[in-house]
Amino acid sequence: MMISEYSFSWLREAEEDRLRQELERRRVIAERLEEARHEQPVTHGRARDDRRTAGSARVSPAGGTM
Image 1 (cartoon, helix red, strand yellow):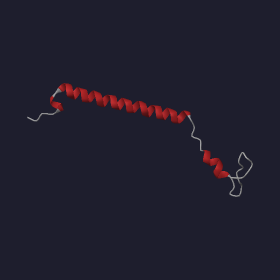
Image 2 (cartoon, rainbow, N blue to C red):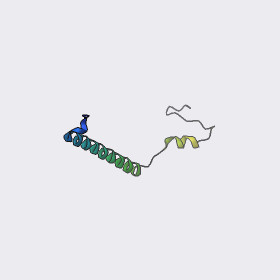
Image 3 (tube, rainbow, N blue to C red):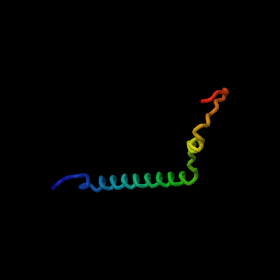
Image 4 (tube, rainbow, N blue to C red):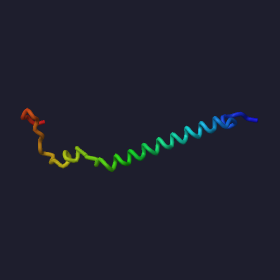
C-alpha cells in the first residue's frame, strides 16, 4: 500500500481547506479589481500631448522653451 497525504483524512481535509481559502482569496481580489476598474475611469495624460501639433513648443515656468 502506498502512503501519501491522502492516506490521512486530516491532511486531506487541511489541503482542501487551504485550497478553498485560496480560491476565496482570488475571488475577492478579482471582485475588488473589477469594482475599482468601474469606479475610476482610466485617464491617459499622453493623449493630450499627442494631439498637439508637431510645431508647437512647450514653455517652461522660467519662460524658455523645452
